[in-house]
Image 1 (cartoon, one colour):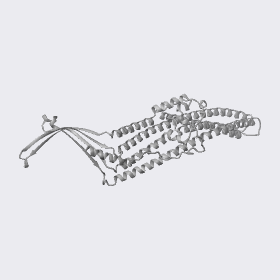
Image 2: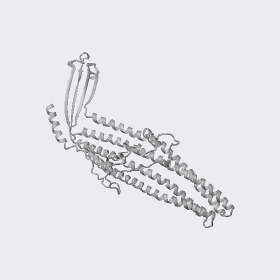
Image 3: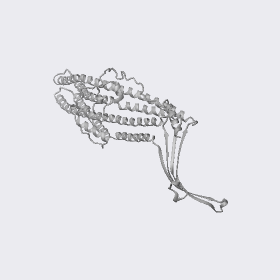
Amino acid sequence: MKKYIGLIILLTMLVSCQVSKKYERPAIDTKNLYRDQHDTDTVTIATMPWQKLFNDSLLIELITEGLQQNLDLKIAVEHINAARANFKQSKAAFLPDLTGNAAITQSKLAYPQGFGIISSSTQYDVGLTASWEADIWGKLKSSKRSALAGLLQTEEARKAVQTQLISEIANNYFTLLALDEQLIVLEKTVANRKTDVSTMKSLKAANIVTDAAEVQSEANQYAAEVAIPRLKRQIRETENAMNVLLVRKAGSVNRKALESQQLPFDLNIGIPAQLLQNRPDVKQAEYAFMKAFETTNVARQLFYPSLNITASSGFTSFSFKDWITPSGLFANVAAGITQPIFNKGANKARLTTARAAQQESAYLFQKSLLKAGEEVSNALFSYQTAIEQQNIRTKQLQSLQKSVDFTKKLLRYSSATNYTDVLTSEQNLLSAQLDNIGDKLQQWQAVISLYRALGGGWQ
């Protein structure tokens, strides 16, 4: 039997080399993935620890708390635990199954038509049974590789959740800083316009302006004042969103000021090919393809025969005193080959389905890389335009401030203007001041988006 089994295994192993296919990454072109960027420098901020990207100690504390408490991250860890258990099970499939049994069976033989008992006997059995499938076609190896790819896929999913979490906490934090600064600007503007109302009352009493100017000044004050409750609501909602990320109950969030923040000096993006190693969702998509590839291998291998070897040993006796004795010892070994002949097209359907899933995962892998390139390009251009906007905005603010000063002086000392001109210049100045804060926020949001798009945050 050993000779025949060895010959069968040798022959099937020679054929099995043509059954299983070796995994190869799909051919994907990363050239020019970043729009208008052709750098060959491989230095990238993606490898920078997130603690070095931000210089705000309070923000670092919030991100650290989020990484410890966030529920989405904990859910991702549980997915890893489940995938790890599946992988361990796939490795155990190479070992034989072993079962034990113990039984007492009593039999009675009766006369026909119930005229008594002819004989009775009791059988005592105890033994072990082992079975093992020879992995001659590599089916178990492919299943193991598929399970490993699934495990690696869940680990990359956790990294993707972590990078997204860091991005969301940082974005909410800088949004709060921007809202705080806008609130300060509005409160100062309201205070200034209250002074303007008093001035208009004095000018009206001196017959320099009309009743319309006085009423317009009051309306101008209320126009700035009415924006404050809306801004406070946005601050409250952003704080609540932050607390959900941190698994806190609703409450205030300790923070610094936007003016104290320092943007990174160098925003190196490296080369597009680095996304394959740095970006977790891209790696996750590749592992999904790898898993589908090995599943296709398994579906192909199910067309071929399987070799199973079983062995059993134990003791059996009809007498309890002779049960566990040399005379009751038994043992047997059997080997069998099972070849699917007709199974209603199940194997063909399984292979077709596996191939379709493999092709779909290849498309999703390609799509994830294109999406990553899009996000990097958008974030980089957003940062560049925010810098350009702020440079122009600085000049705009200077001109608008001069316009407000000039129109107020003209209103007070001559008749060359009216309060409508003052009102227009003040509204334009306030709008530009709020937009200037928005420009600063856009810069930070672009930096955060670029860091995440390049795959930073999980190292």
